[in-house]
Length: 263
Image (cartoon, rainbow, N blue to C red; front, side, top):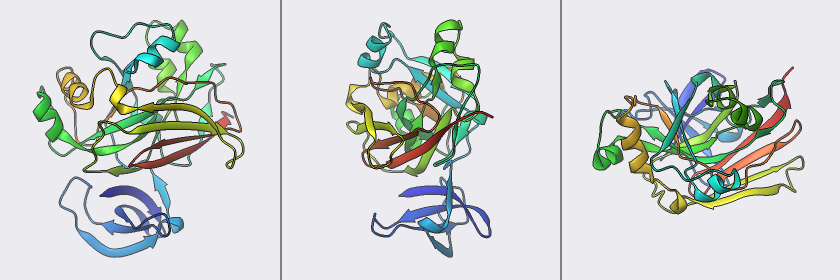
C-alpha cells in the first residue's frame, strides 16, 4: 500500500494512494498509517490535493558513507560500523516544498536516499529479525547537505540540520523488497531536460537496512514514525537557486523539490 499525508479542502488527512499513472486517487483514512486502516469514504483525485511529508517523525537519523563509491568521491574511508547523525524534525519538508539555501553556505548539495519508516512497535535494542518487524515501510529522502560547512565543522549538525534540508515523500510504500532497487537523482531548471547526477542501487549499501535499524536501536529508542536515511550513492553535486531536484526510487516513486535562495 501507499500511504500519504495531504491537504484538502476540509483539512489535513492521511490516505491510501490508489491507481496508476493514468489516474491516481487518494482515499482518506481515519487512522494513522500503522494502525488498522479505516476508510472514511472520502476520496480525491491526487491532482486536487497537496501532498505533505508522509509521516510525523520525532527524529530523522542519517547514515554517512554507506556507499563505498560516495565515500571515495569525498576522499573518505568506508566506516567499520554505521556512521550515524541526527537531522532535526524541523528540517523535514514534503513534495514540492522548497529547499532553501542558507547564506552561511556556498556549497549545498543533494543526497538521494532510501528512507526507512519505523512502525507502531518502535524499536529498542532489537536484533535483525526484530529490526525487520519494526519497519513499517519506505519512502524517498534527500539528505541535503552544506558541504563546505560539513568540511569545516567538527560535527555535522549545522551542515545537515538547516530548515528544509530533509525533503521526504511522496508517500510511504509497504511490503516492498528493498534489497536491490535503483536510486536516481536528476537536477535541472527545465523539467523536460534534467541532468542525471546520481544513479545507484540499494544492493551496494555497505550496511543493509536491517543492520542499520538494529544498530541505531542499540543507541537510541526508535519511535513510531521515525525515519532512517540509509546513505547516498556517488554523484552528489551542488544545487543552486532555480534548480529542481528530482529523486526517484524504483517501486516507490518520485520526490521533487525546487531550490530557492533564503530571503
